Image (cartoon, rainbow, N blue to C red):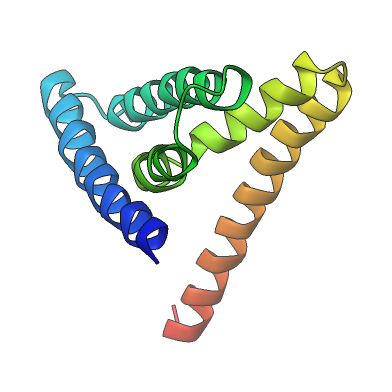
Length: 127
């Protein structure tokens, strides 16, 4: 139960950090391009790469803290970091084709799912 609370607490912090940073970057740039989201995704990916390497390959981190940071904070901050890390690991361990497939499937299916949700909401609302 302690691990679950730790993950939840770090998830809250990650979510609030995303809200603050994404908004701050977007206001700072004044652009319609989503620089805030890009910034959050890049920083989250950097944190995941750093923490996962220390925790999983160097075993220098308590498993509860690893979960709190990787699942809690980074999961609340950005789920893109998980996609980036998993694709990196596929490529790093000798399977670049599956890494590209993973990235392509997420992009294509994610966009398709948004379109289906959009179309369903329009139909439901009578628009």
